[in-house]
View 1 (cartoon, helix red, strand yellow):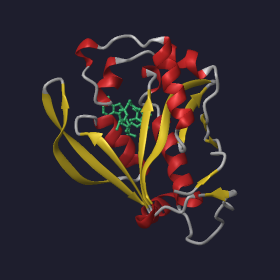
View 2 (view 1 turned 180 degrees about the vertical axis):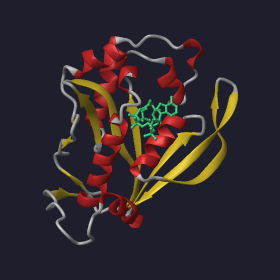
View 3 (view 1 turned 60 degrees about the vertical axis):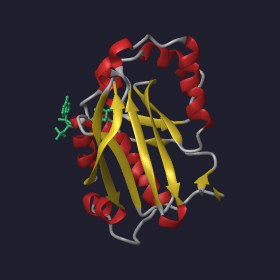
View 4 (view 1 turned 90 degrees about the horizontal axis):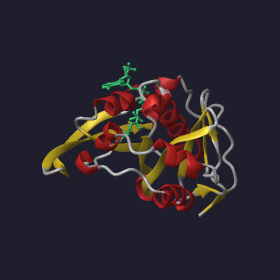
Length: 200
Ligand SMILES: CC(C)(COP(=O)(O)OP(=O)(O)OC[C@H]1O[C@@H](n2cnc3c(N)ncnc32)[C@H](O)[C@@H]1OP(=O)(O)O)[C@@H](O)C(=O)NCCC(=O)NCCS
């Protein structure tokens, strides 16, 4: 896996995607565990407990120790995370995972904004060919947000998630670089940002 070191912050109109800072622990604690968000993330929400100091710290530590994860910052505070996972170098593809954890921030285009920024990074800086995401079939907001970025439904994995004693399907969506380029009006080979110093 080849990643710039350090992982650069990514800026959008309303967000900064950046590595964790100490105040993120208090922000994560304040976000708590919204039942609808946790259900969409695949949790059994029947006995959802409030988040502890240790769990908030662990959330931040996990992002800090992941080589390709960013805290999503909006209006000066952490509201979620986004990360690149499952790199398959031979096939130039990877997976994306996102969680906006503040219910007041959902449905305002912020998730789309974060995914676009990371997709741009994956295609222009890492040189990937394809990105994939896995989403619970009932998570219509997420599917719609991914489609807004340009992801296309590629398949359905039947009964792949067992949540609260019930089986649910997963939808697999994929985004090819050329589809993303077409949507952003990108000319192949033109005005690519110079990649930063890379390490293996
Ligand atoms: C999935 C997620 C990243 C999407 O980001 P977002 O900022 O909320 O989404 P956006 O506002 O960019 O786009 C949402 C789209 O769904 C629509 N939408 C909003 N609320 C919705 C709802 N409750 N049900 C269905 N669609 C909804 C919006 O209208 C918009 O579509 P449109 O542009 O055609 O109008 C974010 O909601 C999130 O992190 N949710 C919690 C955790 C989660 O579900 N993670 C994904 C796991 S795979």
